[in-house]
Length: 611
Image 1 (cartoon, rainbow, N blue to C red):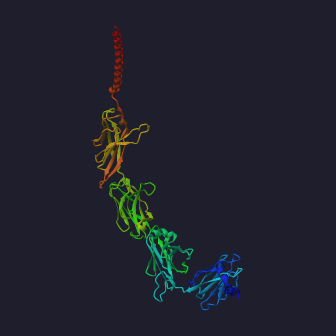
Image 2: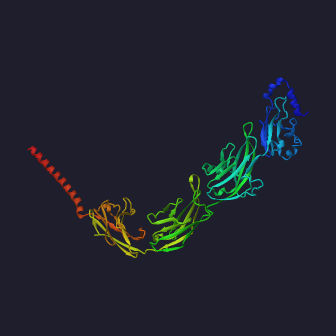
Image 3: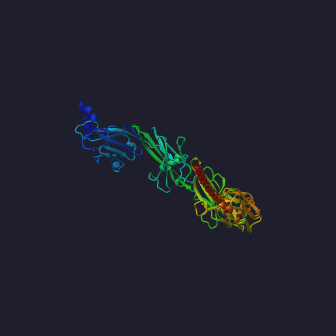
């Protein structure tokens, strides 16, 4: 009779007065059963003991009672005897497939790596006694039932009987910004109530498949909650990543706005879960299927821009047309992608791409760059991927190097656009012939000297050499005067002028009085400052400009000049210089005369009183 049988016999024959002491005696605990697990998978059954006497490290022995022989105990493994295992378990224990692992001194776990159908039965965890008396329970039992593997996972629906599945998964190519949609079939025919958890994962291209290399994208948990892996959580929250169940067995993942880092090998993993009697959920099966090898064709690798027709040489006022062609294996504009095209110009010899001339945005709306407002410039799409820039009347200032800039965008959640690529064309030189206009200006103060209160007349004569017919002249008057307390003059301020269309333009006069500007001859302008005051003192100059009107009715400044300085100093009249001393002298004389007269009158009255 072995120790376990003796222990059972003593427990059956012990006195009744010891039965009540069991709540303070040894107690062995295993999970509540029955436990359902699937053949071919791993199972772990914990066991712990409490209320014992003796050393802190207790020994454990595991036994199996098979259904066909419920009274026969088969030794599985022991913590104290390496030769404990029966013949049916010996090879598996030696290979490490079946083992007992100590968690702590009074707790172990029985692990079976690959469950077999004959492993079904009642498992007993027994602890050899270290107590002075046999009190309590020395073993505990749990039933384990082995289910057949009924979980199936595939990338596509299985074909008719006899049709072979593809030898290798398909290779898919999607454009950056497009949707990536993958489907997975997962089902089980397990007779027990189980839940399926399905997740989609990605491994980097050419990486071996395994848990260490597989990055979860999104998954459906046993409680039907949808969760994403850490790198994809933000995209799931933004609605760019979706996972849904279509019918009873089909699951579909959609990745919106594919990015370069989405390339890789995609897998579908299905896990079967069952709820144990203690209320916890346990995974009883897992299978994985390769869905596809996905390549993401980035827009930056495909976007290309070409311009034409080549170097241009034109005259002023002539139209300028430039063509831009966008090429590459690009997705059409629409729900997933959008494009914008613009032209930039840099003056000859200037570094960098230059300033924007005109562009068409992602909605096809045109706009002009700074400095081009008011000009007749058109930016239009003339073919599927061909864009034209047209300047109705070119100017010498339009000469320079032109480049076409194309940008590609992908749409995210809420139609939000994200710039994915940009490309510039080669430089295209444009030469515009100069007008050849030379201006000279001479200005002077009429009369040479001007006094306060009078009208100061400043004249400006303009001479012109060259230029096309119909040249128009404009002239502006400017003044520079030092601010109070400053030695250097302040920036010049506009006083007035006459534009190329003959319309007068008035600025701000230093003295604040009336100003008149007029054309007194074909090439002679006059500025008059009425009621001159000391605040009008300053250095004045005339700034003429030559203008050309093109066929599109826009004006172009073909030349400019600046006259020499004209000093305006309001003098004071001679009578004005004597007026102040005269007033002072008269006042002093009156005060002195009154004082003398008062003194004489006072003395005369005193003498008269005495008499």
